Length: 235
Image (tube, rainbow, N blue to C red; front, side):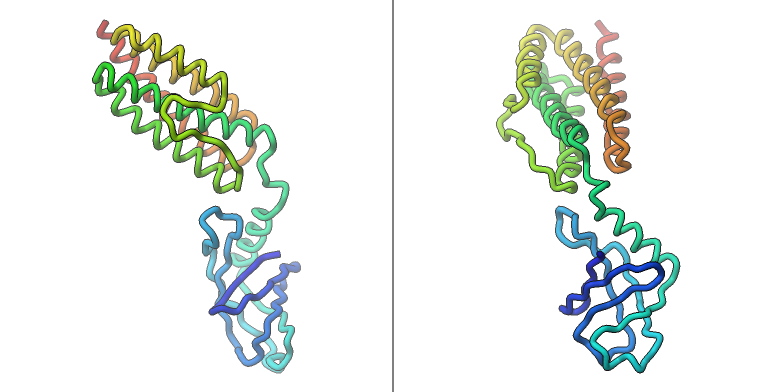
């Protein structure tokens, strides 16, 4: 079932093969223009495709149920795609959900460590990459929100719900506090770990949107890794 709306009138449209049956109280309009909405967006109803539907038989104007509308092949494709989006089969699996939650906290862990190391050693590489890690967090939160998945994320720096990430953060802070070289080694370790975890999560999903985000994060983490290696080469 696809939901469309026009000028305050809610219309339920049922896709059936090449026909679109519209149930509406209006009976005196020959031409309608509707906007198709993706109801699962976390930001509310977003227009996906504006479609124009023309009534073939004008004698049907007095009927409450008006059907047999023509529309172009591109419109049919948009409707089929929208129905697929609403399908339960497209909902993330338990493994995908677990991976997304973990990767969000792991990106936070990286950002929090880099913020600490930046304030401790005042190295430009940490200042640059901590901003990138914030962007990575935003991308992971978008994935979770767009799939309407609840999650926990502490606003406090250095605090994590995942016990393994909490221990890793504590260990990295301790090591990174020793020297500039140790701090850069910490950065390298974070990026290597991040890449490994992202690649594992990538193998666990067939969802195009999730795969796209993970691929972008892997690309960025490889850039970060090269930056830390360049800085370490000076020692």
